Length: 192
Image (cartoon, rainbow, N blue to C red; front, top):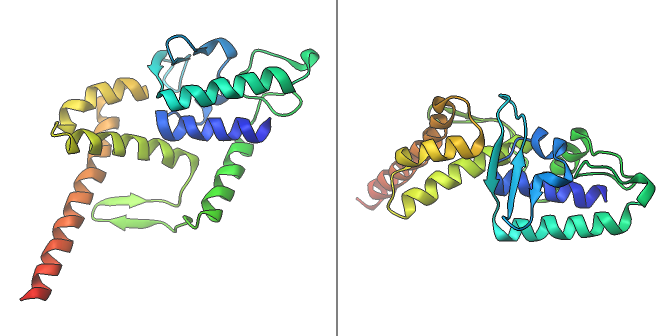
């Protein structure tokens, strides 16, 4: 159960932009299968929010709950959603350990980098939250929308208490644009 728990938690971090503490505190009733949504209670800024989850993530959560109901002995069942093999709530250090093993196995371990005015630290589980935000803004831009206009919705979805926390993700989208311009200028200089 602990590996399956870690997998679904990491999936929630990557696909829904959750903080690591949020799925670790989730109760069984926080997942709403009919709505395909999760209720996040008393998050970092003492806010509650209800967010939709992608169908593929909902399917994994439902598979997990089914396995949990089958594999965790009835006398060890409790209301915490993510548990280990003995029904004990999963701890963050286990998720972090699995995350770092996966990053190393995939060859994605990287040292800290600076790209223009943005620092990129070595990957952590929280990096998945950042990737979610940046990829969401990139998707908006690729569809012809304005990432700036999407920020209030993204801020609410991610549970940011202040709008400017979400604005920080535009730096990465802008840095990516700058990098493309530099690469284009470099390739054009080589042609002449």
